[in-house]
Length: 465
Image 1: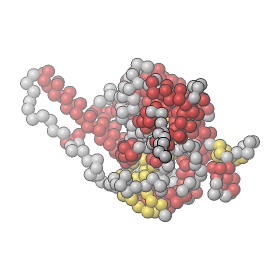
Image 2: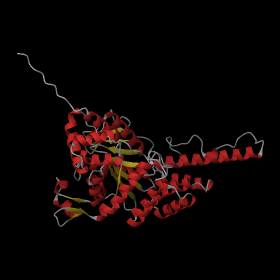
Image 3: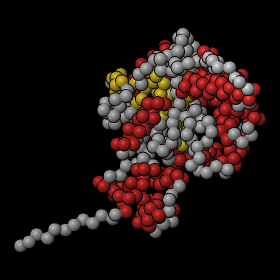
Image 4: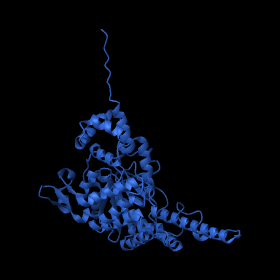
């Protein structure tokens, strides 16, 4: 008897949808996970009013979905499964070894920057805040900046609310909950405001977004936690994301991935180290010390502004003389701008501010110098002067979108929701004169469309808060 072979017919749209999601969101759904993909599409379809997953898939492939559309889809495809002190060894390594070493080498610039790059519903960045407090390190006079980002806006809203159920505390004692949380009327647990307010949340797509970026604050990180997210990316995207994370760390900074994601081959640009039982990855290079004399090799310019020689030949005409002086002046400001950005990206704030001050003195009418100066002052813990510098930039250029964005962030940091919303609204209005794909001036590649999404998300978070 002949055996009849049956052929499994796969809907050709699933590979196409999978490729679209991998390219735009970064989530990888190979053929063996197409059932998971279909379930996620079905959930999104029900919310959006489509008949079923097939109808929604057809729309995705034909309608050129916006980033907002894709982010909503991402909320149905990502799993918010995390808890406090997950993989405890990583936090022990951080508080017992990494942070003490960063304190020792940092010198007079008493600041630390940490980033939870896929924060989910907030347990990880809040664990960082709690771990630093519990470690009893000498950080009273330090500026500790804790960033937390995720592609899923719903996760960010839950994270900012900072209210959790029992499952988020598995493996932890009741004493831990009593120390840092208060019980709500519905039996859940709300994080104490003094811990909650230490973390700044923002939307970010690790695959599509540009970083390091001074405009969004994603730069000069001492420690980056990027755990349980690389596994969702394609191999090519993993390499691209790791390269961006590497550039975002300062020399001597640390990348912490989950134990199942670590690979010396993928992370060959880092030095692997086992600390307190955890495998971690260090960006090697010149140690950061603001008091160290001279320029580190990685940031030494080929020629400093003060050493720039005047042209050897004498001008023949007055117009040639003016052109020559203008060219030399432009070269000087461009070099100062490049030096300031390089120092800022490596966390060398005093040197960066010095370059900005010289830039402003050289060209008092350039709003870009005052904008970058404000970014650095904010990082140095001087919001008053940062605000003044941004206002000066806007006086020189009223349609400077990033200056409005910066003022909004400063107001947000003060807890002034109404003021931040007003500045964000001004920025949104100015963005209408740009195409979505246009890169914004002084933004390190941030596009108008992406900033619009960030502003919309931040304003929604303010309203939800």
